[in-house]
Length: 131
Image (cartoon, rainbow, N blue to C red):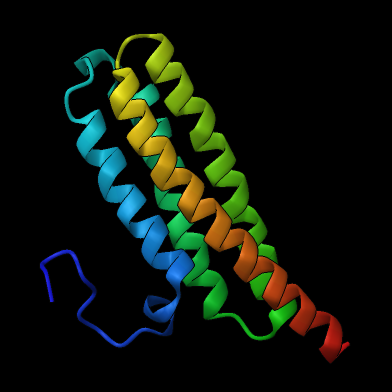
């Protein structure tokens, strides 16, 4: 197990969507480390916050009672991933991210989004079946 892998037994850690979002958080932090200091409370905080929110909402939702509640948190996570897409594009357009770095981050973000979307769809079906 690498240092970046979870060590505890939380249920969210078994979810591929969470793992992809967590890796995205690590990538966003690494990419934004070199951004200008004056962006600390601007674009850096916004991009990092959106990435963290995507992963954290999966954690929180998985701990809630019932599929309907979990689905709501997954929808919030998807919104955060969409928000991050804009921050990454803005960082690229402001020349804070190279095109290659933007592409690499976008591949991570898209992967996390697809997994989160798939999980949301599955949980939504489960919630409807329980109704």
